[in-house]
Length: 222
Image (cartoon, rainbow, N blue to C red):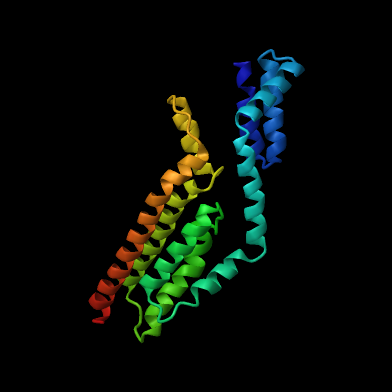
C-alpha cells in the first residue's frame, strides 16, 4: 500500500497546481524509497529508461520549437495566407486550411486545434465568404460549416502528424508495435504513411468543396 504514495503525491500536487516537474520527481523518489531502491539503483533505472526512450527527447525539443513559433505570430501568418484565396467560398477556405494544416502537421506544428484556431479564425473566414456573396447565413448552414471545418482539422492532424519523425503519433505506433514484437523504424513509418495522408487530405478537400456547393444551392439557390 505504501508503494502507492507516489500516485497520491501526483494527485495532490496537480490538485494544488504545484510545479509539474517537482511533483513528478518527488513522486519518483518517494516511490523508489518505498519500493526499496537505493539512490544508485534509482539513478540507474532513470538512466536506462531515458536511453530506451531517447526518441522522446526529440518530441520534447519539438515542443519548444512549436511554442516559439506560435509565440512569434504563426497563427496570424497562417490566417493571412488563407485570406489570400481568390473568390473565396466556405469549401475553398476549409480546403485551403486542410492543405496548410497537413503541411504544418507533418512538421508537428500545432495551431491550437478546433478551439485555438478553427473557431476564432477559420469559422469567421468561412461564414464571411457566404455573407460576402450577398446572403445572410442560414443557421443550419453555419452548423454544417462548423462540422466541416472541425472535421478537416481532425483529418489533417490525424493523418499528417505521423509523418513527423519523433512526433507523438509515430512514437505511439512504434511503442505499440514494439510490444507486439515488431521493430518499426520511425522514418520508414513516415514513408508508408505519406500516401495515406495525401489521399485523406485530397479526398476531404473534394468532399467539402462539393458539399459546400450543394449547401449553397440548398439554402440560397445558388
